[in-house]
Amino acid sequence: MELTGGTLRVHSLDILANEKGGVWLDPLTAERNGRKLDVRLALHVTIRDGQIVEGVDHFHQEHVWDAFWV
Image (cartoon, rainbow, N blue to C red):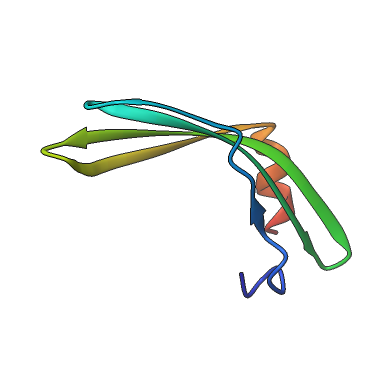
């Protein structure tokens, strides 16, 4: 949030889940140093004993995400 001056936003579109895990489908937007970010994220989580034990981000256009932060 600090690097984007509070402009980083995650807007959840859908959540698909069961007792073993889930996937969040989210667009992310932000502004930083005069640049705008607009990417899509699929976050996959693994659940064990009712707790999230692992999360893996899968970005559409990951190169856009990476370039925004340099």
